[in-house]
Amino acid sequence: MRGVPGPRSVAAHWDLYRRRYRYGEVLHELWTRYGDVVRVPFPGRDIVLLAHPDGIHAVLASKAHYFRIFGQDMLRRITPWGLVATEGQVHDENRARMMLAMRKILARCVPEMAARACRHRLAMLQDGDTIDVGSLARDVTLGVAMAILYPATDDTPPTRPDEGEFAARLSRSSAWLLGLPLPLQWGAFAIDTRGTLRALGFQRKFRRQVGEAIQRARSRTVAEAPGDMLSLLVHGSETGGPMPEEFLADNILNLLLAAYETSGNALAWAIWEASGRPAIQARIAEEGGTMPDDPGAHESWMNDAHWIDATLRETLRLYPSVWTLCRQALADYRVGEWLFPRGTVFMASQWVTQRDPRWFANPFRFAPERWEEERAALAAGGSSNPKRPQFASFPFGAGNRFCIGKATFEFEGSMLLAAFFRDWIAEPVAECRPRPRFYATMRPDSPMMVRLRRR
Image (tube, rainbow, N blue to C red; front, side, top):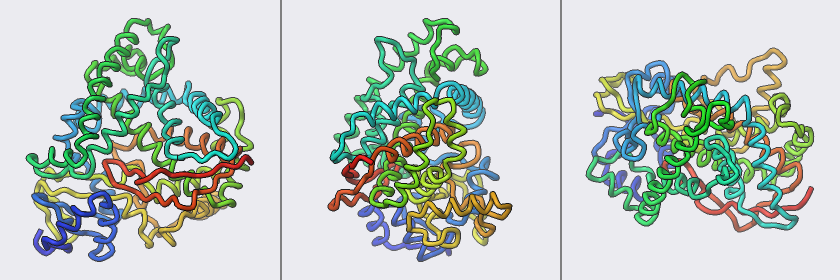
């Protein structure tokens, strides 16, 4: 690491620890000062931030076989058979089954589930209410996630908030220090001791509930199985064979974290940024007014809801729930003039690269129109942005770990924004100033309060 740009002083290490919940902002400051390849101060580890899209493309996609996910030892303690904790053939086989099941659920019932969850939650709103849009968004995404993952019966409602709460607590507790040497990893959990202990309690309860749901799914015939992912994976007749129970439990947890936690956070920021901007709300409301009552027609409607799509894309650019991806080199690896030794950890931060003024004009400004203008240019036979590399924006990751829930997020996000702003005008509470806080996922540091007026 000799000669690699970046701070080396004890003060730099202390500053990173002191601002550990602003870690993304620290990385952005390091990139601004030192450039596209930066040595990140971290005790006991060689960590390098790669900020240029070409370097990110190599590590995450074109040369991904030279790397493994960093922090897998800790991930395996939480979900040993989950997709995020496995590699090689085990990962690839189970990811293929999960993706096939997700595609089948998406085609059969995700639009209806997303529409039902939106209607149920928005029906509770009243004119003049002051609400936390973070809570609203997470309620919707939890309802959709539970309906997708679990069989719904008369005695087993599809929404069990305790499991969603576990996902949230797990995200907060596993925070930012996944890369510390093993003796200090559990010290990282001690930062939020009470939350960690409660998360472990939820984990035991969660696994017991998943085991019961698996047994119920197995007791049904294939013909009797409802349209849920767990039943598809248990029976395996449509996904290349049944998935073992230990794989099921861990991957249900992974999907909860992705479908509930990350999606809910992104949608909360989308509503918050649109609040107080009447022009954006009016454009979304206009497209929301054309949303069909029949969920089966929603895919066609989404293709024409260009402003809603632009709002979601701009939200994911500015507020990526997964704000950094870390990969550990399995062999010596060269970046430009530097040869990094085996074991070096490379960080690809969406928070940093997606705020780069080389690729995005006025990068700190929430401007959905940038995507709408590019779409219009493409439709007219032009180019979206010839100077912007492919990996200048990568909110869903890349390569063989690309997020399998992207399409589901787009359905529930489009429907929630359309239904919400079609009926309501949202104005932010003056004293409310939420900022991103960087845990394992990025969450707001305070409630995102808005006042509602009926449109």
